[in-house]
Image (cartoon, rainbow, N blue to C red; front, side):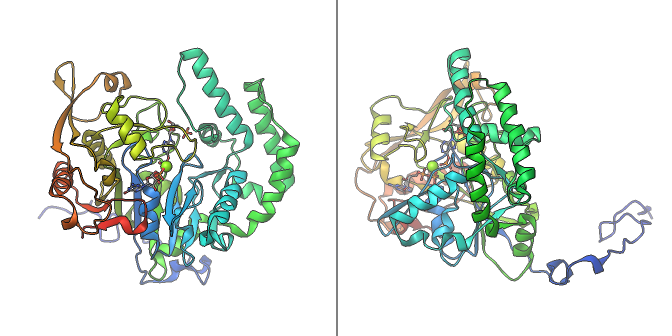
Length: 469
Ligand code: GDP
Ligand code: IMO
Ligand code: MG
């Protein structure tokens, strides 16, 4: 018989390894680590599958109605998520869209970069719009490990964009919310975190001055009101303290305690991901599924369903290659019918046909369980609808989505053309109520991606999201 001396036993130990006695006496009495029968709660994730603005906010709002915890795990207030409830249009940038559910806790995880004036202004402006935000501070928790975006990070974002324009003739088209500079500080290990702000303010202000001066040395034109910003931050620190929590322990308790529905709201999108997106025309965080684990402290085994939000056509804000872009009447029609204007910056979004090569690539990275297909109604008036199904470069087919932006700018797209349905889908509330041409369009997407479409959006409201199964 073959020796099995190198095989791991059921506990994952190699034969012969000593049993490690855990010092369970050091575990606090209320810790879920003490329980031998730990319920395993799975996290449901909603992610953008294109270049953002797919309608993630709306999908999250829908799922958040029976969630216990709704989390943001990455990005900052570069995101702009719109939710329409009772004809009131709320827009969220840092707050999870689930904050509208008064029974749920909203959680901003360690992977998020937080501009505090932005957070409080956002809450204030939504409070004025309707009743949805009432009591928001009582149901918000913020990870002590989240990094802070300072006003000078935002100013530096603007200066860097100017420099790119001057030196390279083009910028990235960032939202100028300080996202790149704040994540740079985090990676350079001189960033400041929420735990620094709510601890000893004297220590915090010394570190803040050093960081501000560091940027002033790099950018001599940078104007920083150090004392003014510190005064404001001190006030925010008081208001923030009750909301701050040990994010890892918070998530751990939620995951291993009594059954809880946990929802994660992705910001930005797969093609804006710092690793997998159209680099360098991307944001500075991981907007794909890995960002959920690193941005919240969630072990991968707890990630359950991953829903990809796909707009029935494609849009992009800012600069960068866009193979299916329609810089013509079709693009203009999608832009105006779809009201494609950035929630964060007010910029017009570039528009084009649905690109399934790109969505399939997003699926490779994220492993979508199902898709929420939004804004189908925007295609209602088109006599003909195209979908990008293959890329070629120099006459050769490309097997997947290219890393190199020069290649992406040169691809020619092969399209499949569908007859339009030329009637309104807005009142449809079931799959069978959709015109047969629209049904075929949806079935084609499912077949191409080999992922089921679970919801189809035919309007802005909660009710106009058709559930297919
Ligand atoms: P997010 O960033 O992914 O949350 O998306 P945004 O909120 O930036 O942009 C999506 C826009 O489309 C918002 O104005 C939504 O209200 C709107 N929207 C979402 N789903 C639908 C839909 O199915 N039909 C229509 N007409 N509008 C939708
Ligand atoms: P939501 O969550 C659309 C784009 C910017 C720019 C690039 C880098 O609403 O889908 P940044 O300010 O992040 O450094 O900008 O990324 N971008 C988005 N575009 N929707 C978003 O978020 C975006 N977040 C960042 O336009 O091109
Ligand atoms: Mg948006």
